[in-house]
Image 1 (spheres, rainbow, N blue to C red):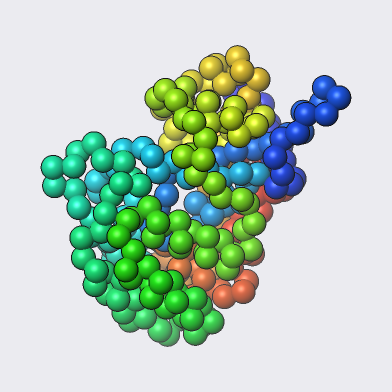
Image 2: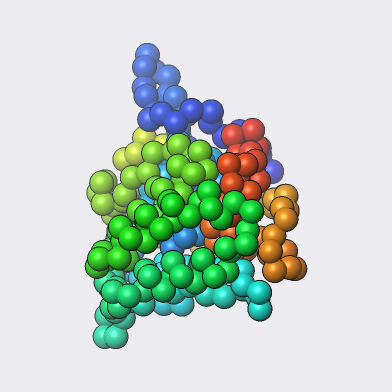
Length: 260
């Protein structure tokens, strides 16, 4: 695909179908799970017809898999799920286990302390507290992340089906592996975040009839946020407690946008 080509995102959440020689467009995004990720993660989900969690990849330390940031009066602060990593250099994300059963209660209290004065905290609080109660006994990081992702998608009215790479038969590494997942999922378009430009083999996808589209995270509107200055790059929890039911209005309108 020429680098300046404009790719219009498909309008429906439906698998690709082949009928009388015609293929229905289907956009697939494939990303590792993150813990309570920022709003851009949910925009990427919403822009796809199927979102595949790639948690059979190697766990990476000091990454977004088990941590994210929230705003506190003194500035941005990390919330980190403690996991077992010593001597487990090659473990997969879905093999990574949690090593402190008290983490969920600590995170719940920290979020409460940071955001109790936010205008819609009480609207979001029952969902968040229910989630932390539900995952308190969960032993695997991947399961915690998925539980939060699905619940937060509901709050944001993001309805894209979420599947797992292990639902398919991924083979190869990097570009080859992503391509195989796209082919097995019936994708006609692969939607990626911009960070993958450094390694993704677009020609490989083109040879198999799959377009590559690059998601653009620019253009987010600001909202009234506690603890200025404003910071876009914090957990989506920040957006929810400040804007409540209006939170989807502060996401990028992925279905009417284009990816380049």
